[in-house]
Length: 145
Image (cartoon, rainbow, N blue to C red; front, side, top):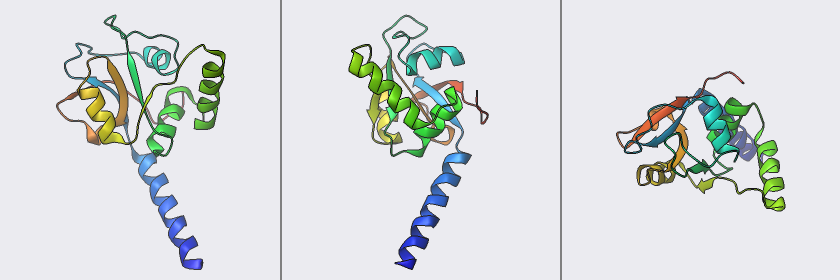
């Protein structure tokens, strides 16, 4: 049992260390025609306040699943809120019929595929995972808003 606890603590520490060192970028398909977005535009899309990209097309925001540490980091850096608060926000909107949360991808590879294949999709990934199919449009800072 002691070994299990030590292994669990080590895994937790490694996960926190990796997510804290991640530099997250908001990305769109390289074919989208979007060059840059402001923090307010990103917040509005991921919080359901607007449904259109800067070029006027209908947006498809894509989130990582709750099990990915990058999701918690994303919302902490973008709006200064914990993931539980964001989930509660979306639960209220969904229950009242006022909105639906972003589409969820199980992992970064799935998110990258969804965004690369759709000019209307927008999401976030660790900068290290950028490839030629994606275009970064906003870089999140390590500081809270």
